[in-house]
Length: 383
Image (tube, rainbow, N blue to C red; front, side, top):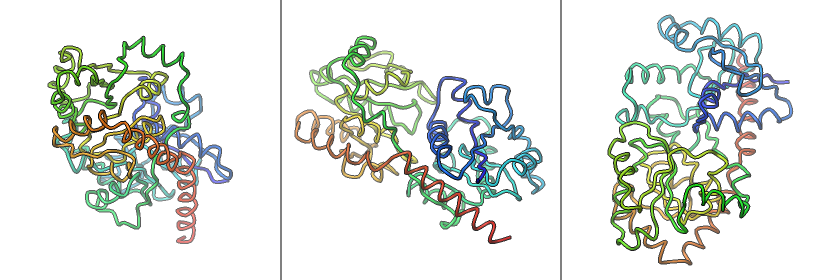
């Protein structure tokens, strides 16, 4: 039995705040499937908090506080003092799923790095101690024996910004949960439509309001539609306010006379009916490590209009209508084309369903489990 110490710190934080993000969701989905894979024993670990373990209903191993140990390792070149002892006692391998990578010379470490956005575009992230955090993050990437990332585009960026050799990085694409393929009950759809006062037709965006999500240009693009069309197909935004989004928040609060709607936070149980009801998902992001909302919309049978930047064409294949995210007129033209061409919408739905079926969490778990075996085998052969 191979014992895997599995990082759940970010997942636990998200569960505690009722706001699980992409990293937390990845950790949760992968943990459930690795736990059920024959030959592996999963040992969740966290970086110290009385809340940790409570939300997963599991006993988690406490690896101690992350920041003091990370600075200790950076300044001395030695292992994390607390985490090293506990990992050696409980695990054959450590998987740091959430960017919190320990320095553990005696236990092999696999780290998941979903992208290099804070390094490639520091102007898009929050400013508090940004330089110090980025320096620590880059250095910590070198503590891993092997790195997992989620797209070929992300791999190229990790090679560039973390200065990691290509052979040290494996791509394991994300998956889409089975529940997205199940059409909502009519009663569920009716409840959600009534609760959120949804129109019969609408364009939808899902994501946190932050610079790289490009919501300002999306709003500008929607305003380029003819007045009647704009009100027949309003733009609905789902997502909390993040950072550097004052202009977007002001526009959303103003509402464009009903043509623009901001739903803020939507619980998981309502998200699938909302996405399924949309005329199309519009995803104008300037930069993504992967782009999971595309797959979720594909699986839900919703046409997708997507940015052609970074990893998104890799994920979309031929199943989405792509546009230049820096040109609001191109986004607007894509919206108009979808409205006018019902045949195109039908083709996108069919291609999207087929595309989504290629990306499963089971496949992600299988690839990850095989990597565990490879890294352990290489480590043992090198002893």
